[in-house]
Length: 414
Image (cartoon, rainbow, N blue to C red; front, side):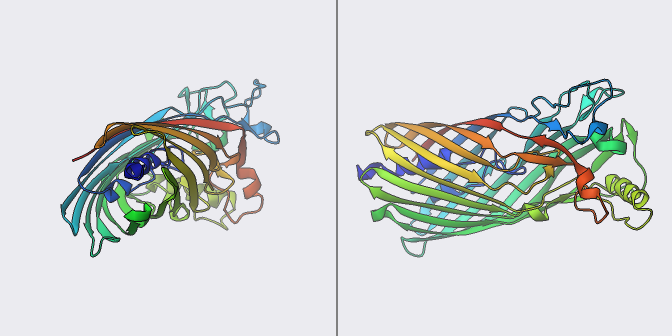
């Protein structure tokens, strides 16, 4: 059954990919399709159905309209999907070329309009807090194989990002009604890596670095439709985070592969502070501190870097069918978390199945269940060096949440 191991490796890459990781991490930025032998093409679609809800803190009655006894949020997470595709060409034995497309970062969250007014505006806009982020990434990779066991690869990455944010509700105080539209912007980065393979043992290990990508984005900012003009307009600087992926697989018995993925993402250095929001927050902190602190705060940021680990096993069932099972863990990016992303990592279990009508093409599907980590949500002022601010910034608890992810992939070797 040894000749079917490549099919197992492809199946492993399907269900170990991310769909609901920490912060805005989405695709996992895998380069595994580029490490397939010969000429190879694949396309996949992933969807997620999350259920995330919470409530304002019992100690914060000021965050609930006086005429409401309900302090819950209902489900705030929207169903979403994203796509990826890859083409790998082996020009000659020592050189290969690949094009990888994915949607690495994303978010789609919408607090329902509720009478309690905690996370929604019941008086004017009749809207809840919202955030939507979309990104696309196209990487061009050139690989060099000096010997059969070593693959060195590197290349540029072109990325676009866009999104919008709407802050609503009593939790945002004077920022209730703030809107920001981030117009689409592109930036360039790069990725590089090293892979070691021993085909006789079905051993493969790959270490890949993805650089941060800098963006300077035009942002339209207003409060309930009225433009904010506290300072001169300027582009907002945002850098999508650098990351490292470590992938490993090896045979442990005939027809069986053990595989693992480890991913690190540098979310701690990620900051969003649009120009007018920064000026408005600086004005707020100056007033709050009677002039002792005037540096303001961020629209969104994260306290810690993200770590995620997947460990799984794949089994060849027959000449045409194979299956995989894995366990996953994600650290999250710290607690308290942002209102715009009120979960702290996850634990997961995944199952996958693959069908090979012929040896050179396949279709595979997978499903993954996520237990989302409990989190305390805060409004962005948590870190300010002012007495009592850390406690006052905590506005909600989000517990016992979950999600289901689905994936479908087709691949062809030629």
